Image 1: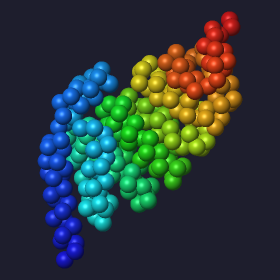
Image 2: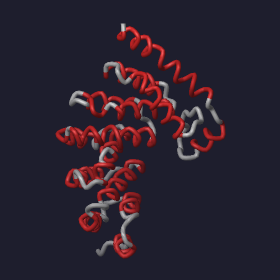
Image 3: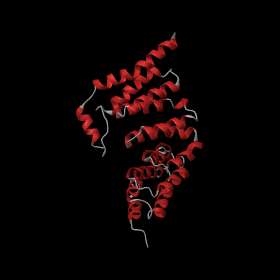
Length: 247
């Protein structure tokens, strides 16, 4: 009897979420959000805090469901292409982190390739869900290295930004540098920003090592990556890093 209740709830949850989001639409919030993107992005127009609150509330109603059922709901939300629905899906995926298993990698990889089509969707999902996944299953770091060669810009960005939170804690330092090495010649500005961002986070625990890495590689490193990477370093280090490399 309890199981039947859960199934009915699962079938109703997406329409309930969309009705709830539609009631909260604010055109001004939608217009402000669009300014952060060069491309056209689908928004209802709801502040992130309100969307996250909704994500927590609805997750409380479905958390007892089978993980595959919840993943199916996440995919339905991603398919809509609305940023707010994608945020809820990413929040739910992260809330399931204690139930992750190795095969989930291939679900997550497909989501990034098929649905996470702007920097905000990519970063929200990768910083938290993928970051937690690789901390639990570090053997999948080699799979992330393969993403650096993908034709999909979001998989290439994901190869770097997945390590943002682990790198901030001092983890995966050698792996971060290896991925940075492979991305060094990438011509996509958003991938370059992701590369610089993860180096910046790694520098919080390995400042001198990252600084030396930048000096050794700045001839090949894009200016965008360099500026992101040194943003939090002391002024003398930033000045030295920005000097033209001796010929």
